[in-house]
Length: 296
Image 1 (cartoon, rainbow, N blue to C red):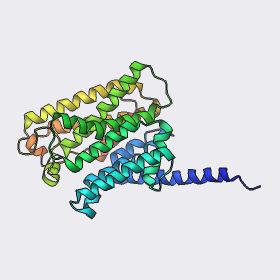
Image 2: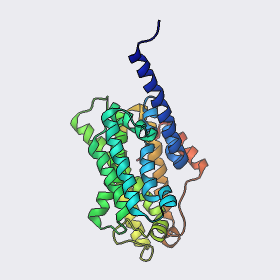
Image 3: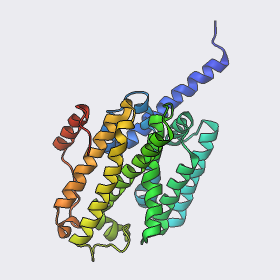
């Protein structure tokens, strides 16, 4: 007996969604090896949902990467492309479908887990700042970090806990931890890319800091700020569901090690060298996370 059309339609949508998730996973694997291996520590279905965040990479390529190879310095067209991507994201979240596979994958997760539209709006706002701003004061820096990193932490957290019960105090601890970890990630990457951002993009994220005045005192202050973020994040880890905890621990340990290496690198060398963690060290970090080591 033939299957009802409604059932066939659902099967077609499920197949399309599976293809979209695999496409998004490929984007993540291509552009972020650390993020890719961290997702392997997540349990299902969180692992699959987490791999739908390829949309974040696509938006970043519009403002800082691949789009420039095609568009050159045509910021008006880059802005138009970003605007279209943003509107397609909201439309897909409403309809549950997009012809853009990467957008479709993200929208499915957003609908399934209740990701807040205001977080997505903040993300796109920060991406737009990358197209129009090259110097930041304390206020615009905070705005940028919130939208480019802290809300990513909040969206990931929503993926982890959307079907879990927490009291108000626990939720607040988790929120602060997610934002702090996102901020720490972003600030570490700013320090790793200080020279490239300034010389290639003409951009300096840290207020009043550039390669010409960057010194040991400034570096120590920035490293200490990151350490404070990581300490806030560490307080929330015990509340993260076990299905996601090891992956979060691995990510925190990785960026703690990066920050420690930055701390040990002289300021004059830091602006010429991108700090990395070797693959063998990454494997050690993964092993620590699997064994239940917790950040302090």
